Image 1 (cartoon, helix red, strand yellow):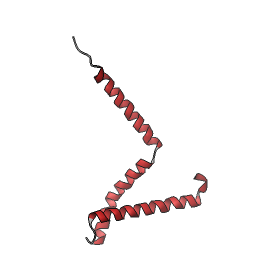
Image 2: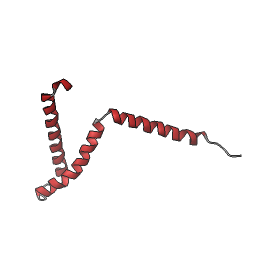
Image 3: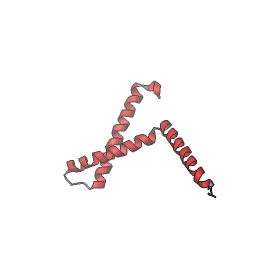
Image 4: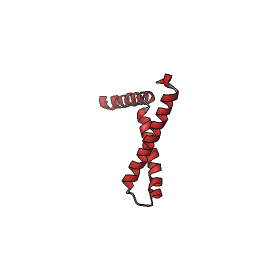
Length: 89
């Protein structure tokens, strides 16, 4: 006779439910997605900043400098939209 474990049949159902819940939350909340994309863009931008400085700055300083530039640009775009489309906010 074959034994049937309750845990093996319930676990995939729970995993599927959790994945569905994460997917639905991701669709509603855009901030984590934007932060992730910003960090990925920072990984592309920081080596260019490091090369432009000619090695005068350390790698960590160039990553922070490029992150500061991205935050500055993001705030400028946000404030631009707040000023010219105030009905949306």
